[in-house]
Image 1 (cartoon, rainbow, N blue to C red):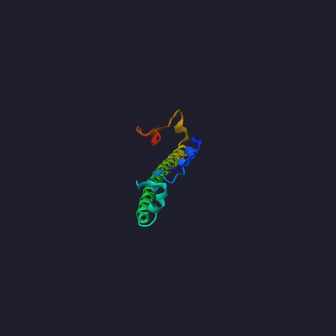
Image 2 (image 1 turned 180 degrees about the vertical axis):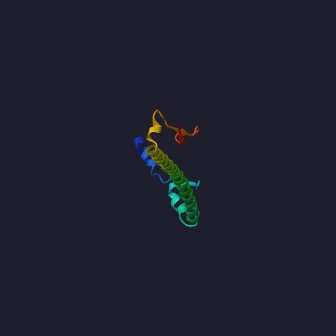
Image 3 (image 1 turned 90 degrees about the vertical axis):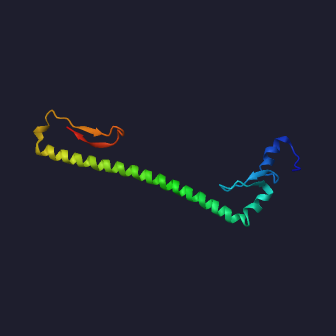
Length: 126
């Protein structure tokens, strides 16, 4: 490069210099060439290769998103199921209380939780 100018402008020039060696911006392509030659690398026969690389990258991102969404849905489903289980126990307890209200004098109910996952509700202990 035959650029001449103040040293303070060197960084700005490097960002646009046609002779600076840069790597291809397509994820998965390691090609490096001068900035002025990059347009030729991106067009023509290389375009098919780049489209395949971009498609693979897209598929990886989609699989990662699907995995994340499935994990999130599974988590929400478990929370919903535990809430439904809790509602069932509450309903059963209320029915029992209505049937025998005097039987609950000085009586306690404790939740049974999974030891490895303290948030998981397993049942009630009287």
